[in-house]
Length: 168
Ligand code: S3P
Image (cartoon, rainbow, N blue to C red; front, side):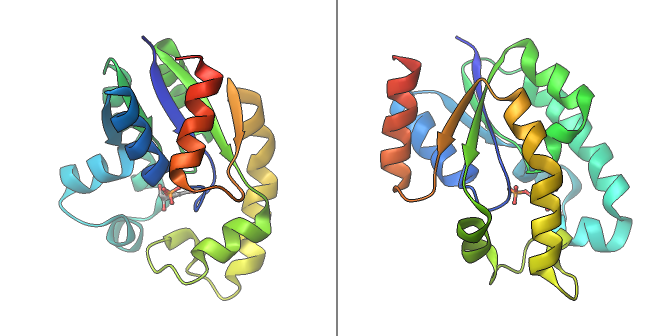
């Protein structure tokens, strides 16, 4: 079967839903951000701080390419990964894209206390987040094979919803 690629904004639950979904379907689970941290030996925060975002995006592209070679895997990618066309191309070769969608207020509520979102480590994170979400929303929608509303249910309920849609 195709890999299941979870996409969506920060705070949409890609990690926790990914893990639950992989268990449920007996698939492997990988997260590109975790792979980047393992490979570089430092956190995503530190990569942004020490090397800057362009360097992070280069690592992300290499990692996405490697991840795309997997089979029977749930792949959770960072919220910005699918803005890069090469990343979309690699992942689409053998991947079905599931967009975990939630409105701004829900996402903001979930990540406002988070300290590991370097893009939001700015003077006014709320404005920055709103601008990023607005700029990305269309892309998430347009590459998605399946859109799942994740505003209110638990990860288990969301997983059930996905499995139902996949007609597993
Ligand atoms: C990013 C999202 C993060 C991480 C990095 C950049 C983004 O992943 O890849 O901080 O551009 O939206 P999550 O979506 O898992 O938070």
